[in-house]
Amino acid sequence: MRRGPLSVAYLADDDGEPVRVAYAIGKRVGGAVVRNRLRRRLRAVLAELADDPELLPSGAMVISAGPEVTGRTPDELRNDVRSLLEALQRRRSAADAR
Image (cartoon, rainbow, N blue to C red; front, top):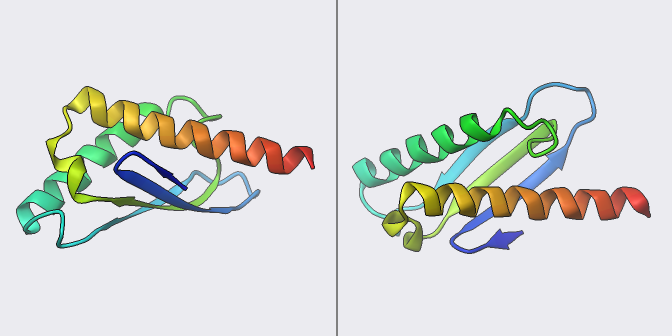
């Protein structure tokens, strides 16, 4: 699923364990310093959003970032991640309803 410059691949796991997150940030985004900075920023945003257990379900996810994400302000990045996780939650709710 893609929202803005971010995308997520999610694998559900109903064992109640905390979410496991990996990051896929390719060289198109920039050099190693830029990619590591972005990874740290994404990790900080997810740590901030971890207070809401509905937003971060148990399981495993891979968050991918495109080159456009490097120009995002912290607030824009937080909104992008929140939007991505809310879309994932809606998709999971719709699948559970079936």
